[in-house]
Length: 223
Image (cartoon, rainbow, N blue to C red; front, top):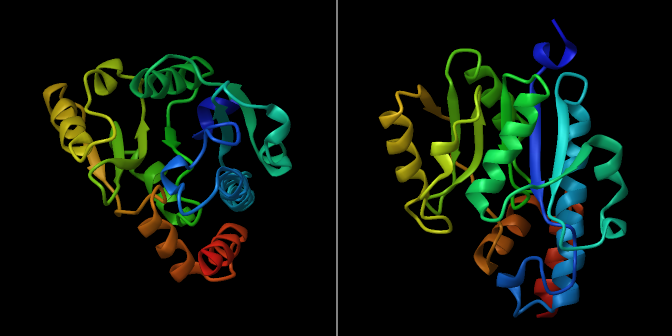
């Protein structure tokens, strides 16, 4: 059995940092340049946390191709194998992320985004544990979407005609999984930092523990 078949894969989907293209829902009160620096720290905190699990999990970073690779924090390259995202819409990009890793031989694949820099590693570890028994695992987000999805097989239909960026994402995905007879379990809920309320929560929860929360706290004090 190949190494990839024996080990699970974690895929992180993220944007290449670029002024005016990242964390735009935080502008205002943030400036485009502030949001750019904040997002780089999101990536730094998130990928730094994977150093504790990389001995057991193969980490991949799937990036959009609308920015500069040079703007990517060094820790991303240090921790992850980098691949470009494929597809046009969000659903197609998520599907192709699973598909690429499935082609590489992985059979337990968990995909997350980059909007939760303080997400506990235990959520990821729990997702891989669930995938030893179930075909699908989802981490619900508080806004009605999901911050994590894990699969044993890349079912395209799970990502087609989903009302992305609405509160109906999770419910629609679960109904689709049930229709396809895909055994699916939920893990603990978490939150995304994609608006001012989420940013304030990040600061309140973490204080100066993370680079992103420290910088965000300074920005919010100024604004």
